[in-house]
Length: 454
Ligand code: NAP
Image (cartoon, rainbow, N blue to C red):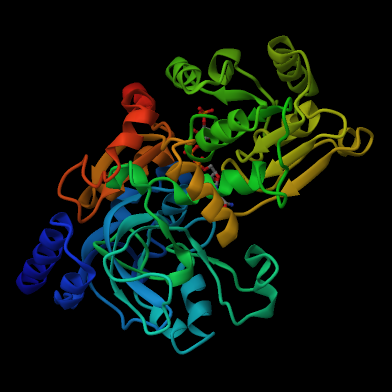
C-alpha cells in the first residue's frame, strides 16, 4: 500500500508537471488503486427498508482494489476527477436490482469480460483524466492524452451495435453495468469511450458532463430523440438537475423556449441566470397529480397546462420526462396535439399510468431514450469544448466522501452536478486554454456553484 501511494504521487507529479507521454509511460503503475465500490456480500443489507432509508454512506466503501489486466482495446486512466450520477445512487442502494447480476452476465460473454465478476463493484460513469497506458489495439489515443470518458460500453464485434450502438443487444453503461468505473484513482475504459478534455475547464468541471450532457443531447438534439427546432416550447422537469440543466442549454442553443420545472426559489434563480426565463416552482404550486397511490387528478394536470400557457402562450411541443410515475400522467396531458414526450428514466417509479385517450386522440408520441451512441456523445462533448454549454458543477467532494455526495443526490439536496476529486490534489487545476475560459466567462461557469443552497 505504501508503495502504491508512492507510485500514485509520482504519477500525479508527472501529470501536474505536464510530463510527456514517454515519461508517463515509463512511470511505474501501482498494483492497486483507491476506488469506490459496493460489496457483493452486502447486497441484502437494506432488505425491508424504504428506498429513502437505504443509505449510500453505509454501502459505498473507499479502499484499495487490484488493477485488472488491460485488454488490447482498453486504456488505464489517471482519474483526476469524476462525478456522482443517479446511477451511483441506484447501485449504492441495490435498486431496482443489485448490479452484481450485470457483472456476472458480462463475465459469461468473453475472456476479458470474466475480469468483471468480482466480489466488489467499482462504480462511476464519468471521468476526466490522463491516459496512463494504452492496449495494443488502441489507435487514436496515446499515453499522456487528456480525456473525458463517456459511459456507452459496446462490443464492437456485435453486428447489432453498428447502426446505432445504443441498439446493441449487449450495450452497457460503464461503471454501472461494468466494473472498474470512474470513481477511482485509476479506471479502465475502452478506447471508444474517450473524448478530448475541454481545454478551458478544470478537471472537476470537465468530469461532470459526459453522462448527463450526452443523454440530454440524444433526447433533444439528435434525430434519434425528439429533436427540437426553432420556436418549439419544451417543458423540462428537474430543469436545474443533472440532465435537466443540460436540456435547458440545448433548448436555448436551438432557438427554442424552455419552460423549466424546479422545486425551490434558489433553483428558479439558477435557471434565470442560465437564460431560462420561464420557470415553474412546483413546490410553490403544490401540484397534486395523484389523489392517492392509485388515482390521478386530471384537474391538477389541467392546472399545470394552464400555468404553462400563461407563461409561453401555448402547450409544449416536447416534454422532457424523467421523474416517471409522479409526473408522466401530467406530461402526456400537457403535451401539445402532435407533441412528443421523450423519457429516459423514472426516478419516482417505473410503473407508469397515463390517460391513453389524450395520447391517441391528440396524436402524441412517447419516445424512449437511453444515454447516447459515441457519435452523439462526441457531438455533445464538442458543445462543451466550444464553450456553448457550461458544466453545471455545484459542489465538489473528495473521493473519500463519495457516500456523502451520493446521499445528497439521493435526497435531491443538490443542483446540477456534484464533482468528485480523485487524483487531483485540489480544485482549479487542469485549465490549458485560459483565453477561451475568459470568453465563456467565470460568471457563467460558476452559476451553479453560486446558487448551491446546501
Ligand atoms: P438529479 O440531478 O437528481 O435531477 C433530477 C431532478 O428531477 C431533481 O433535481 C428534481 O428537481 C426532479 N425530480 C425528482 N423527483 C421528482 C418528482 N417526483 N417530480 C418532479 N420532479 C422531480 O438526477 P439526474 O442526473 O438529472 O437524473 C434524473 C433521472 O434520469 C434519474 O432517474 C437518472 O437515473 C436518470 N438518467 C437516465 C439516463 C439514461 O441514459 N437513461 C441518463 C442520466 C440520468 P426539482 O426538485 O427541482 O423539481
